[in-house]
Length: 120
Image 1: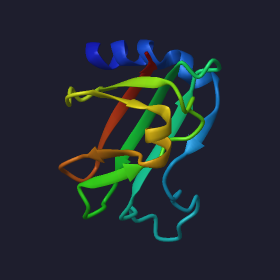
Image 2 (image 1 turned 180 degrees about the vertical axis):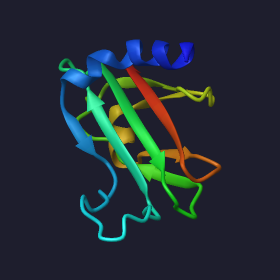
Image 3 (image 1 turned 45 degrees about the vertical axis):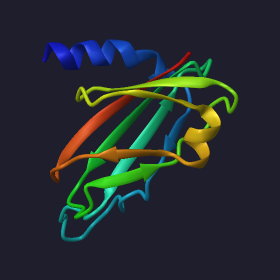
């Protein structure tokens, strides 16, 4: 719980800017209410675009990896990437993250992670 609260405090600014749906959105109304076999991802940008958070959910997808093409970043800026789960982070340019994307890996279904990006 402490870790979740710390992450929430770190990404709070991003929730006041732009929001992008990075994956195919599941239908909002499903007659049988079964869980979808897909991934979902939502990107939030701070108003100054210096901080980004990405919420990633692996629903019932059989694929353990999903490539996300981020949006709205500064192409010539470098972003440090951290994961709430503790997965090793990295750095990438905004242009690279928007053109090539970032691969998210979640070993099991019904799992989630939060990516935290900061402009360097």
